[in-house]
Structures are given as C-alpha cells and as structure tokens.
Length: 397
Image 1 (cartoon, rainbow, N blue to C red):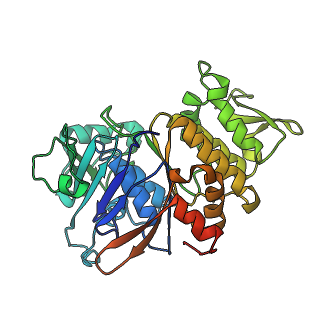
Image 2: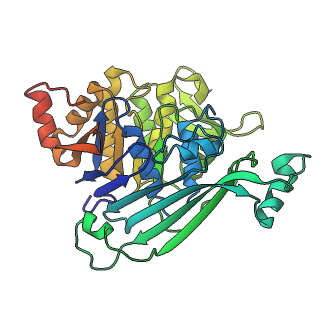
Image 3: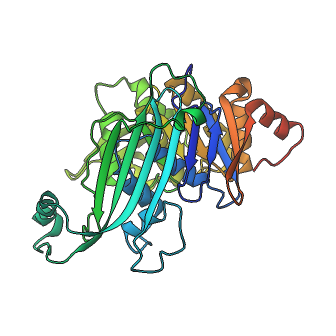
C-alpha cells in the first residue's frame, strides 16, 4: 500500500476513551492491553468514523456489542456510548453526550463531531406512517396520543480541505462550519429500532467488523455473501478461491463451496467435501464458518477497505494460528485491505510477527492503557516487536 486509508486516528469521549491518538497506523495493526483498556471500543469508534454520513451505524454497532439483548432498551445502549455523568440511574434525567473522532489518510474525512440527546415528544407524520404499516406492527395500531421517549444523534462532518499539510491536532482544532450535518431520531416505541433504515449512498470508507461470534452465520450474512462471493461474473480465483484457500488450512478435504437450495427452500451454503460429499456449512466446526466469513469479507473490502476484527484468534486452534495469520496478512496485502484487530493471545501476536517477518514495516502494535485523564496508546513498530519477542521474550500485552 502506498497511502493507507487511515494513517492517524483521534478519539475523544467515545465510551471510556479519552484523548486517544493512534499515530502511524500500518497495513496490519494489533491492539493489545488489559481487559477494559478500550480495545473493542476503538474498533467501534472506527466503524462510526468510517460511516460519517450515516448515524444509523450506531444501531448496528450497539447490536454487535449487545447481540443478546441484555440492555433494557437500545436507547440505553446508545447512552453508554458517550462519556457519563453518573446520573443515568435517575429515570427523569435527560442525558446529553458528545464525542469527537478524527483521522488523517487517504480517506478524505478529517473530523466527525457527534452529539447525542435524550428527547420526549412525538415522531413526525412520516415516521408515524412508517410505524403504522402492518409489516412492522402486525394488526396493532401506533398510539401517538402520548409523548414518546427517544434519542437524537447528530453527525457534524468535516471533510478534507485541499492542500492541507498540518498535523492532525492542528487540523482538527481549526474552527469552521461543518460541511455536512446528518440527524437520526430513534424511538423506544419503535420495536424494530431502525432495522429498516438503509444507508444512503454517501461517501464512506468500506468497512466491516467481525466479532468473536460473527462466524455464526445468519440469513442476512448469507444473503450478503451471495452477492459478492457467489456471483457468476466473478473469477473463481478472485472470489471463492480465497475462501477455499483459507478453508483448506483447517480441512484439506474441502474442495468446493456453493450456494444451493436442495429442497427448494431458502438458499444455504454447502461445502463439497471428499469424505462427506455435498454437506451444509452448519455441520462443520466454528473454524470453517469463521473462514468463510473472514475470506468473503476480505474480498468485499478489496481496494482500500478497512477490516476490523475483535479477538482475531477467536475460533482458531493455536496450532493453526500461524498458518491463518500468514493467510490473513498475505491476502490483506494482495487485496489492499487495512486490518485493525484486537487480541488477548500472545500466540496470535507471535503468529502475526512470523507472518510479517519479511515485511515488519507493515505491522504496528498499540498497547492501550487507561489513566485518570487519558487513554494512552504506546506504539510498537514491527521491527521493535520482533526484537522484543524473539530476543527478549517480553510479553507486550
């Protein structure tokens, strides 16, 4: 890669992150640190940063964090994305929060200012019409006689100015009017909670987030994969070939992958296996499911996208880690995908070091630590990381 999509990132006020700066990002970046040091929060903030004109990304982000629906409401989930005042236990308290995200790199965004506020009122007539449709609420009607509880998220977007050469801190400190303002309102009474919101075709950085449970493929992921993985117009070696290469690292008897509907029902992913024949993906272990999702996602992001992976070692046996990390770093280089991943595993760190031993300049590690006032990121270059691990055996986590 010549110029990376993200070269420097600043995050302030998002969850527990305070005045965090990640300088000198590389093609492959590893976030390490103790529990609750902010590693996953960095990935979440980046998913918002890369979709600056789409406030609806907040709903997708909180669903990934609370996929089991443990929080009382999605509104509650959204509140806790911002710096807290300790008053949310008061049900009458109207919360206001904000955060600031910035970046330098090929992606032309320079600053994203986000404001959150609780609200009580009534939705617009257009929103009422949407919520009243039977496909959303069945035969139930929408009560608009009483005020509803909700939240409003505002994005103020600042794009790059031609010829800017200042540092990111100087650039983000310049006062000027926002280039774009996007507003989203969500209501607790909306059971679908924005599920049918569709991203607008605005400027964004292609980004995907893989969580430790993302390999448990669902219908929406199958439908999405069928569009880019099983498209007959794609060259085999440039689509499914990547998936087969990765799957063969776990099971050498895998020879093919197809989307099929053998009984005339909804399509599913099938694996051509030397011993099992034409078998559904669900009969295989978590590693193969993760391989399908990882490889197809990498191909989807080709040409400058960003892949965010939480707990990169998840679902992978330690004996296969080195082979998988070799595949990940090589394919990221081939497809020009920038990877930012978290890990708690020293084996994963060593596997990535080994895979990039000849291209150590492509690897950057950040050790995150929370202090009283700031979130500190200690940058460790690839060369230094190799020396720390191979010569001194130091634990960089």
